[in-house]
Image 1 (cartoon, helix red, strand yellow):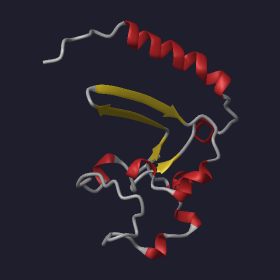
Image 2 (tube, rainbow, N blue to C red):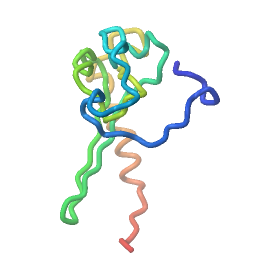
Image 3 (cartoon, helix red, strand yellow):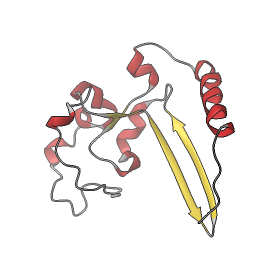
Length: 127
């Protein structure tokens, strides 16, 4: 439900600031109330993140994972800048579908699709 793509401002790169108030010319303290928190992005018709994918490479070893927001208490996201991305809020499957969703409902579907992707992946040698 975010703004149409053609009306969005240019991204200009992502910031990994943990506190947007520190040395940030764009921060507007008037937008620092609970009504502007990441968990309220849907009410403001802003873009919302439903999931996160993480990859880390350390000493030639990769670690990866993903998180899918099924039905968390999104107000905890109000204390951080999720993924360091300030121009999108946070949502969950339950919020977007307007009904209670459980992990037990989602897990078999996520496992099936993840299995399909990983079993059919074409492995290529490192160049």
